[in-house]
Length: 168
Image 1 (cartoon, rainbow, N blue to C red):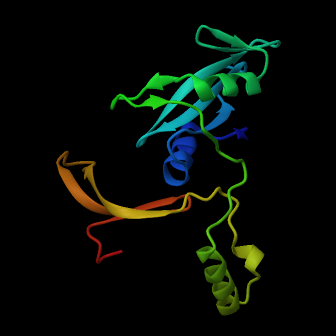
Image 2 (cartoon, rainbow, N blue to C red):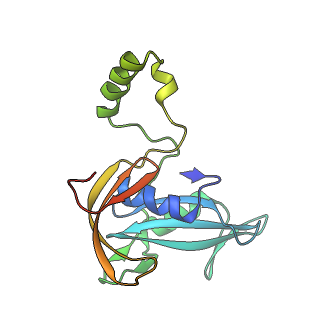
Image 3 (cartoon, rainbow, N blue to C red):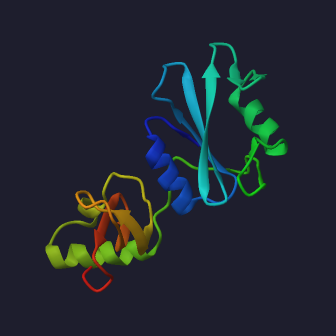
């Protein structure tokens, strides 16, 4: 559940697309060398908490733990925080470093490899899987600052949007 160089946004994307309430991961913080960020999913959002490594212990708020396992065991039973909806967030599901691809991708890779003459392993990107999501979202225009409804698709690590569903 330790993800060395994962960014804040990538952590949110992984936990929101593949995680569930109580899914969590630990990553390096961009702020200081001795800081880590504990990213936890609660309902439809991800909260980030600082964990300071002192060299001999891990500090989380007013609490101090001798190891990360002790921190996780503590917050598996004690809530970290209450979400906006009043739901208590506890650590339930460590998010694994390696994520299995959904089986649907296997047949697509094999078919594409046969069609293009490339090997199946050439077609597997190194980016972590984010699953595939699509739907309407509202975005603000870059020049004219009005709000527009657009059809967005998120496939692995690529986000695209279109005027409507029929254009994609």
